[in-house]
Image (cartoon, rainbow, N blue to C red; front, side):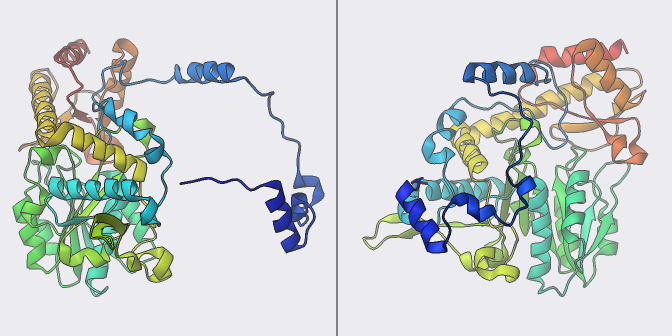
Length: 449
């Protein structure tokens, strides 16, 4: 996007056109006492001094590249290939804005198109948008889309309690004040997966969709065929929030008949970033595309028959439809989506499977070692991919404090924070970044607990 500053002559011309002499006159309606206040700010610093100041502040942070971490719960420590910052910080990508003018935005539009294509291939779906803000807002938008697809005749949403608690909180915020009923579906206390019988009992003619996570918040692999059949039998849609790394090893949600699939794209080469910015993936079936929120880049040809790219189906969007738009989101996480695109292109299909395979085996090695310690045991039966819940002999918060203070290890997530019945339960993960030595170090520390 080009930036052309105004000249002094142009500024004088604009002031004359609106009938004022100085720019300061535009602030005349603000009381003079507060119009241009004196700010109590420190003296300015030179660039080297600024760098030193921020380096000192940053040194106070705990970073996962210096301390073993087994904390996941929605944000994961994965490797970021060096090619990502190398390409991402090029001016063409780094400063690009919404590509309304395709004649000067072909690079940006093609990147978005490639992102959408890879998301469809990864999730097993037909069409994808240019991205959402993050995984939680993507899932909430999917729920609203499901209601729209019923022409608002179905207003009940079944929500698995095994979905990330923060995702469920965002969903509740999105639907607040709307004529939408959220019905919580329990998880089986033995297997940790969504109760299929409860879905069958709750699904009725007013049910728009069932929302599940795959694998779920506890890391357990949901019974996808049974859940898909249960909601489809009632005429509702099957909406899945997926782990993009896990589906590189598992069957993609599309193969289970999912109607809408969302995901948090952070595991695809995005650093933890202290919680954001991240990027939401959103994909659906071709027949539902006109109710899909967000931007869509499409492929076309120019007047000379050459391949080109444009924003398409824009009549769905807020800048045209206003209150009748499919979503209030009228943008996308273009920069982070570009990083995800670079990551998927760099590691490729086989590389992503290798990452998933490493996560699987390291997590299972960790789980097997933990299960041999006195007082520790796996919380649920069944299969998990790279994250799992553990019963602990002492409160998880106490164990985390001990691990950090005594061993410099970042422990797992305290499930009792969100699930009172899971007090003294710990959610742990392992990724390709965890070495065997780190896992053994954790086990030795817990053995001495």
